[in-house]
Image 1 (cartoon, protein in one colour):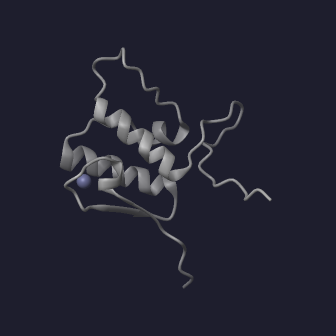
Image 2 (cartoon, protein in one colour):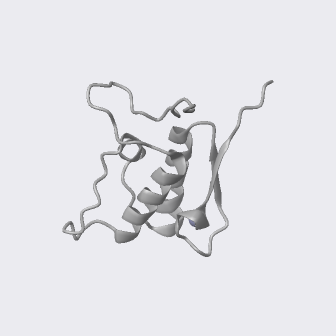
Image 3 (cartoon, protein in one colour):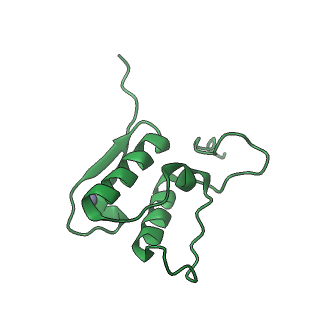
Amino acid sequence: MREREMIRIHCSELGIADCDWVASGETPGDLVRDVVAHLGDDHGVDMPDAETILEGNYIEDPVMGDKDEGAAIIVRRLREALNIEPRVEGLDAPSVMAPPPQT
Ligand SMILES: [Zn+2]
């Protein structure tokens, strides 16, 4: 069985200082779903759907007072860590594939 490279993110990297939980997955989608579940269950953070994060449709809007400010920071860090670009108009699939390396 070929071992694929796993993506890992520490909870502390996302801004939860006193947590040593680590998310791991073969795809950004797997990982984001894990992170959303963990943050909701263990930290009470009201995260948007994994699909929303992956598609890049989550808008950080300070006017929306009912949004958890911590969640906005976590989403931004998560997307930066996974190199998730905003969804391109006209594509059916979210752009969660890593772009080919530029030469
Ligand atoms: Zn945690």
